[in-house]
Image 1 (cartoon, rainbow, N blue to C red):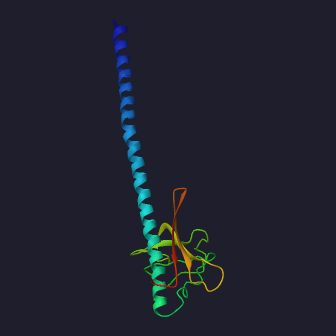
Image 2 (tube, rainbow, N blue to C red):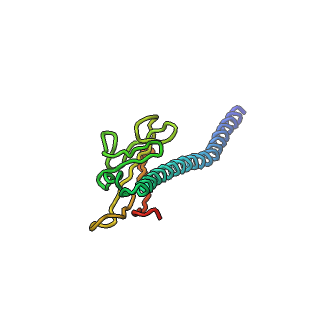
Length: 176
């Protein structure tokens, strides 16, 4: 009789282990789905911020163009140094264009952005994971150059994965 009682006890432990294993499998699935959903939401947030940062820079360049034209100046007068080989940054929080990549600027990814009442590239505020730059590419190589392609690049790294968002627009010497 003693052996029967011992076998029943061992069977109960096996049942318990199987039940715990099934429960862990049942809980692991939703946790993986929730983790992937959170990762996707964070990536979408970063993409949206990058898109808005790119649009901001493009709008500042367009505003400079409009102001220069209304003053009777060549529209690229204050942007002439921002060509393919010399990236610049334009922020709505700063009245000046950052040009001439210095130590903190990376020629391939642009200026690091900080956050203090908005995103900025002047180093004031808390560092962020975003970098931004813009540069002009002439539409033609002969005669007076009235048309340029404005390229805005916003980049960031999430973990070890580099991400990049590019915006382009063709601008001419006309406000129409």
